[in-house]
Image 1 (tube, rainbow, N blue to C red):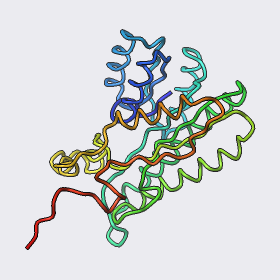
Image 2 (image 1 turned 180 degrees about the horizontal axis):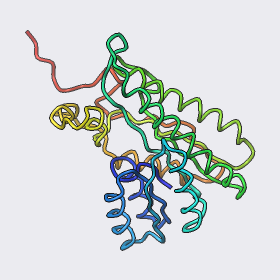
Image 3 (image 1 turned 180 degrees about the vertical axis):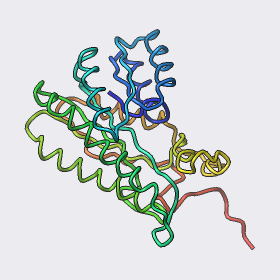
Length: 252
């Protein structure tokens, strides 16, 4: 099961697992894109593909998705909690705060709502892997990202607590935490301003969504006794949220 599967890292994860013939359960708000992906996957090696509208911020949407998924493809062996976003670069002293709730409800409550519906069934069946898509921003905050960084830091605590709460129940909880990845992330952050979003990645080799999907796939396919607790994945040109190498510095 992949949340936020209609684009970016979510889509790449779906493609990676489809390549291996997994049955898929794909959820996202953009159902037209989701439907096109599902049609494509069904013509390939994917055994079964279920897709439906999913807004992780709404408990009713999560419940409806999970109930329908159970009927069509069953309980997932792997859950990829991918749905998330950043909105704006407000500093606290002059923030309007309009996007704060959206980020908290998507990045944190969304993970909690979805995991709450899947985890008990995994425990009952005696196995399962839950993978969070975190961020380097959860390890080190940056100016203009206080709320986004806070949600990703909170996700670390959720993972750690879940690991302790499920200890001995054959449940694996993993977090894959990327640095800069070229997806629609910046386009969403800047509310559709493509020119501004493109400048984030201009002239540098950052990560691709497929790079993160490979890391998710690796975490999910380790032997049952191996749990990848936390994997930080950075482009070579990035050391942390502050330090990126954009070419030679001009002298003089």
